[in-house]
Length: 384
Ligand SMILES: [Zn+2]
Image (tube, rainbow, N blue to C red; front, side, top):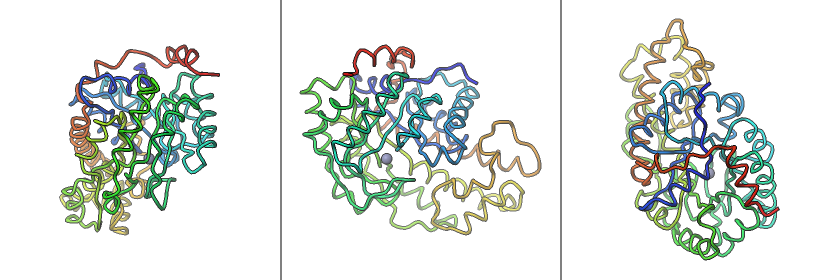
């Protein structure tokens, strides 16, 4: 296990807030070892701090939060990663949140956004009351995002009310808050682009600033994948069939960052990059489809042409995906080659994104604090 300590999310988001240019920390969802390794590689190229996050689905896929924490620790150790990285639960509930807070995560997202505002505040505050004494930060969610992502789905956009954002922080002392401003989960954001209201971000941040909250409380943008059209085209050229995929224009994300977003969540983009790499690999290496380790992957890709979630086709290679130990046996070299290609393509996209988000070069401005230090700070700042 790496002795490199994972970074509290508040320290990461604070570095973005204090930057001399508009900046947000990239938060990248991961499901398997090479995905994490690829994100880390991209971060090193850009000298960027970041948050690695795992949904409840990712935790199930790997067998629990402790496995995800181990996987990230191993990926950092293997690559001698020395830049600040946090580990965060994405869209958690209280039960999974407590488990992650006890498993080495440095941030927990508690999503009670389906509840009325007072109940949402109460549930989030309950998570804060559990996590902060352990030095772990908390992100809440207010408003609802259209679309589907793992266990989360909504039929329509419910915008956050900027007038209530400061109150949410005051009632909960959460570190971060995802506010719905018209982005959506999943690959089909097209219909929703016309509904993007970055002024929700602007007005929320202004109200936070008026209340003196912006030093320790941060706004988050979910559903922010850009859905690169060249990647979608590559998937379709290599046997896939993905239609209508459209992301959030980068200029809109940059506008949101200029208005006060400090954490930008990216999941779908990486799924697309991984899927394009897999489909391309089988076109370029037809014999790999017959090898023992990858046969199930190819069959799963052939069976579902619109698949973009790597868990749906990589599940057959478990337990290799973790690379807890170097695998051996027939067909392993092809698997290792595919994973290396995925790492590289993920790294390229992550480097591009953190440059655009303004967090490239910010690694050295992240305060060197530990979860232990945060226990003291939270004990002073929590109002109960
Ligand atoms: Zn989300």
